[in-house]
Length: 138
Length: 420
Image (cartoon, rainbow over the protein chains, first blue to last red):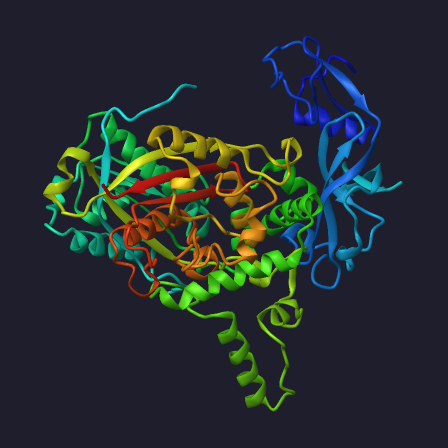
């Protein structure tokens, strides 16, 4: 597992395996999610994989009623809005993700700071398994 | 990074801007030619087109919108300026602010004395869904993969701002009402209508159709009504979002020492700055644009001016929340204070810090590749005292700023112009 390159592709493979994997700089300890090949804090190239536990809280969000074409095809839109947001993980990094288990039709009731837990959202597309990172209230 | 100065100064001596709006039967070239000819006619003492040495032109994604790339030779040919070098700049919605900046830097280098800068975008030949998809190309791949739309990214920043500073949708209403108050004063605006005008239009339509006449207490009550102001991406609603637009903009830049040959009223470039920014997940502060802060700092250092010296500004308001956050990132107000200043009327045309006298992108229109130079055109026009009904009522207008944002904040510029 440790030999994979520090790329978005590796990140997606790990998600398919039910793991949220990012990088930690071996020199300065800075964390990064998704992984990066270069430390953006100290420019070191000594990166190691680190698994994030998936616990966090909602930092910001939106409920989308005008959906992009790919989500409109799945039925999202005016009558079926969906929520995406920025989640601050316990380890200190942030992730952008779908937020499920909240009422997208009542966004005024969704609270920044809500405790969340990662939810792996897997679907098959043309025989290819693809996992997106989601979060739901803990 | 130390205090960076230009090796040689530059000045704006002419400008042109098309009427903005939806013009399906016109083409990008038509818009650019119109803006260019208006620019030529605007130079007080005249300019010989043959003396233009180089062109920088901003365009975001007409490659996608009209299936045509490689615009540089098309523009040179259109203007009869082959074989002069034309360079296209792309920075999403900040594309032509980059063309302006590259023009300034080219003059500063000593290579050219007279440079044409501008921008254009043709967006109306596509459906709204396709335009949204095209603009989405300027978001970060992580944002798109998670399901964010453009309004969604700005809506997300709005919830962060609200949670941090205790603001709510009322703060956004104040921006929208202010912009629409300036709109009818701008003959180039796509929507030259106040919110009151929209209310009256709606009432009239209901009356004609024999439907019940809607009742709204005031403008805010209208904006609270989801029948007329539906949600797009919470808390962004229809009236928080700028429209889809076509149009083009042009400015003539010359070396500072030559400016008086073209006009007795040149407008000088006092400072220019450009920064890059993170996508949402990597931002340290979700209620701020680091690219804007970097651009502002550079422009202030170069000019020797501070935010308090900037008498008015065009501020990138693709979405209402962006105007508020940028007023803080440009240093006009402390973090968490700009929305209160807007509520107090400070950013109105007759306020102490007029913001978006043009009506902003919200009402004037946002042909993305043309916007950066269109904003600078407004500052130029105000500083020359030629803004007509929307002229800022200050006889000592001397320093103005133009702030342009590309994508979801990935590229930002700030330019300070001055009369001397």
